[in-house]
Image (cartoon, rainbow, N blue to C red; front, side):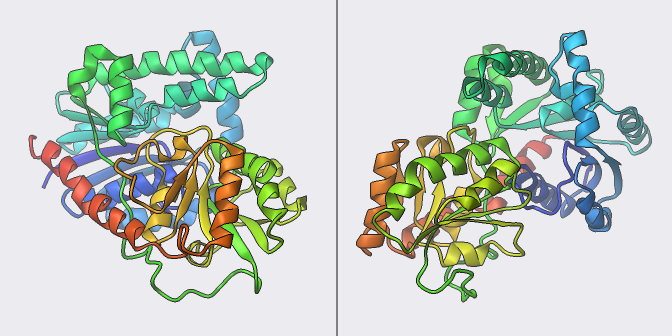
Length: 399
């Protein structure tokens, strides 16, 4: 049993959005085997109610409030300092002091950093094992954002892409191991930072297979006769906002025109104003936060993942497949998954082809069946958290 310092940019509980799902399962795995000292920020006041749960898991914690509005103002210091804006966004003297004190007093054997912004709290001179989970190539995500923004704001996104890549390359050189969420993400970073390629690996995401089971009985959340296309995710996240707007405007009307019973359900917490506005469109329902997304998946005709800005493996896709749900997605949403050719998945970035897929799914019940045993078996075989995190155990065993 080792003493592990685990630094995470956002409180890893509850596991209700992409990064928190991954960071929580890593924390759960680590605390079952080691003494973990957790340092993290809380950017949603509602999450403070979970502090006690994390304190019961860990040997020590430092949970600090982070006001996103103030943090965005603070991030502008990066323009003056010539750094990525992400770094001053998370800069905090209290966290730095807690980390230093913990390393000094707790005989830390290894430091595990989740998201490169937290690497600023790790001193290069420390001799213990240092592992960083970059998760995605975030610099490339900023570059993708820049291509969808107007010229007068695109430059700030391009700048962030350049500065963050510069920082991540430096960090990767200072840590023993740099990890990503997929082989494709790791390969991209190796091409961008060939000087550290030998230190780069990947650990894929998993699914809570006991929780996400489509074969169970769930109450139907839809009105009688509705045929639902469902998107799940945090609806204040720009990539998700862009995805549902594109689907609602470009794809869904072509389905509704031929199938008046079709509905597009957007299921997820904190919907932005641009998402709420979609509810004024015929056939579109924006639910906001729901206590359980599984009934929406279980009773949907298709799960849709029309992401046009994405990196890595999408948890929303894995969860839908674990529920035995056929999936209609863009190539970006499926980029991190391998060997999906025989699955009940339709992949296209063309709105006309997606619309035809949706119409055919309603018209021909054998095309993309309502329940897909193949999709369920795929995640059972390939995306178990325990199986993937054995790789983390192997890295820590080298202490």
